[in-house]
Image (tube, rainbow, N blue to C red; front, side, top):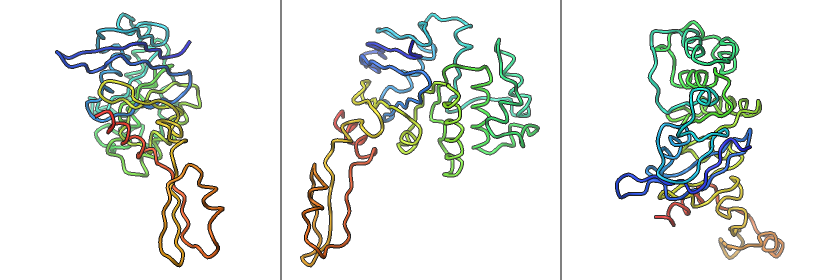
Length: 275
């Protein structure tokens, strides 16, 4: 059984289709990234999967149940890490984790959770004193203290500095290595490329491409650009056979470069084409 199975999902706001018939599968233990510009339908899709918003059509199964009708036992099996979260700022990190853990029938040991997210040194610190990166680590601690099988991460590293982002990536990798399935929404394409085994690009309420970061949108089949410099100046050739072009160059060239489209190139092309 897949943790997430979606067929023909639809949602409208008035006359505007926010989600226009998408299909989506997420495999056990994988990190799956959902990409798309603002207004593409990412938040609506995730809220439906979390059971926080009703759909207008289609079939949705999350951990074997319909999130629109699932009960408390099902909710204890998922973890949700929102982009922004309200908290009791005067509680300590340890008190917060213990408090949230009390809502679940089978919680993790709070001290183990705090250690897992790298906050052992801050266990006695009040939440209001934490840095942005430490606060996001606490958000994850609260999201995983109930031993969830599936975790939703909504823009988890917005506002992070580069070092904090990479530390957070290590945490996500460790959760996935332990078998937790993760659905990630992010605007950072390098984050999706670093973490996700597969991804989907959502635009205009539809999935316009899906695959691995290396293959999505035909990235692996796209033509390369070969450039070099010789006595006649700078040359540039777009080709599907860059090896043959390089092999055919005369001696004496310099500044050889072979470049293929980045994930950002493909993503911008996909959402541009949709618009």
